[in-house]
Amino acid sequence: MNDDTATELTTRGAALQLNGDLDGARAAYEAALRADPSHAVAHNNLGFLLAQCGMLDDSLTELERAVELDGHSSTAWANLGNVRAATGDGPGAVAALQHAVELDRTNALAHEGLGRLLLAAGRLAQAERACRAAVTVADVKAPYLVTLATVVGARGRLREAAELLERAVELDPNLAYAWQQLGAARLARRDYGSSIEAFRRALVLAPENGRARHALALTLLAGGERAAARTELERHLMLHPDDHDVRLDLAAVDAAAGRFEAALASIAVVPETERARFARAAALVGAGEHEEARTLLQRLVDEGGAYAHRAQETIDVI
Image 1 (tube, one colour):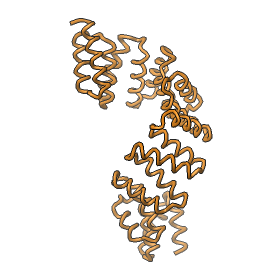
Image 2 (spheres, rainbow, N blue to C red):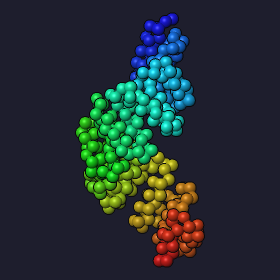
Image 3 (tube, rainbow, N blue to C red):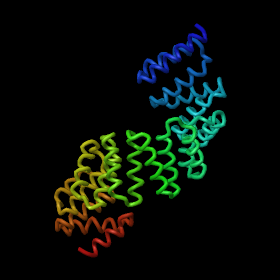
Image 4 (cartoon, rainbow, N blue to C red):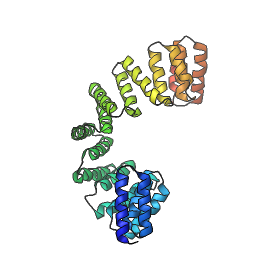
């Protein structure tokens, strides 16, 4: 077999991968590499596919071979950078993505990947430059506007972040995570009504998005809509029954409404933590079980943890 055969197999693999047939795509890429072990694109595509499947070590091997064979491929360098980032090699990831950008200033994915890494490293000004470059060169801009908004928000410019997210959802109204982040940006500015609307739009598009539903519930609670908040917390727990923080939020809502037995029932299935012990103590106080509550609260005080001060304040009033 020859290079033409390898190229044909690689093209076939790319079509299969695009259509979600990862097993078929992998078989095609491996066949291409049997035909031509030095086919850089086949190594790159196989490396990208293996990363999709969570096989990061094997992915790195393929992508390192791809850039060894074709050091001018911005795509391969970008893929290598993203996989290095996934394995925790931050400096190596930044170096690879910077090289990808140097090779092709129009590689939006490389700019965005670099921006995300710089954001994680706290290099916010550089992260913003990289994300703005991604928006500038991208054909489909909405996802890149969301990333830029994240960086701008991290720099404290909440109004601008919200405006960027407004542009993103205008360009792509079906981008669920953009609506979720818009809800968070509006909430940070205490615009509760618009925040609730954005979270609800996110959930229409992605009903199983636990973070959006939890955020919606807390926003409803902050706006005084306790019954609606409780409904959303219960819906969340139907999909994510092991989310103990949300179960404690539900217990707090019940306790505030005087449903102390319901609160205690929720807390009973949560692993014992400082927060869980304080929640149980608070519910016991409400239920009139002061002796048991005082014992739990005193333990929190003696441990000197995050709830020690609140525990002491509660002891002082019962």
